[in-house]
Structure formats: C-alpha cells, structure tokens
Image (cartoon, rainbow, N blue to C red):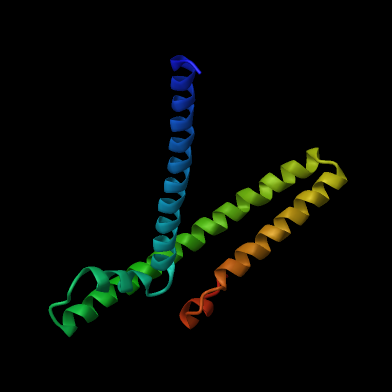
Length: 139
C-alpha cells in the first residue's frame, strides 16, 4: 500500500469513529436530559431537585419554598393541559384532512398506528412506581 491510500483509509477510519462517538455521546446526553425532565415533571419532582441543589436555612424556609413550587407545578400542569387541548383540536383537523385524501385501507392503517401510539403514551404515563404520579390523570 502506498502512503496516499494509507492516509485515505486512516482519514475514513477516524471519520467513522468520530461519527460513532458523536452519535453515542449525543444519545447518552439526550437520555440523561430526558430522565431529568421526567423527574421534574413528576408531581413533587421540582422540589426534590431543589432539595438536592440547595440547603435550606430552616424548616420554615423549606415550607415556604415548597408552597411556591406547588403553585408553580399547578400552573405548569394547567398550561400543559390547555396546550394539549389545543393540540388535540389541530390533530383532529389534520386527521379529517388526511381522511379526504387517503384510501380506506390507508385510513385504517393510520388509525391502527394512532391507537398503538395512544396505548404507548398511556403506558408510559402510568409506569411510575410513585403513587402520586399514578393517581394524576389527565382530563
């Protein structure tokens, strides 16, 4: 093998290794970020995170902060539900538009796919062992 071929092979090898490391590194970071978001979304999750980050001066400060966090979580859930309601209106309009164009077989395939997706989301929502999150149902 001549030097030029070796250089090209080395360059291609480094590129492949870089792509693999970048992909796996990004995936690991995304997974860690999503786990942190899931924890914060759980009822009481934000307070648990704050307890890890700061040391409260006394119990009254802790209770005051807990009240603030509970109000914020309530507001967050209210906004989340209203966004979900708005999205469902757009989703239904999208499906109605699709139905006009799809064949009956294609429409059935889309409905099957959507049902599977709803079941997966429902399963994910209820998988926590924390009874506080299990009892929280979306209207």
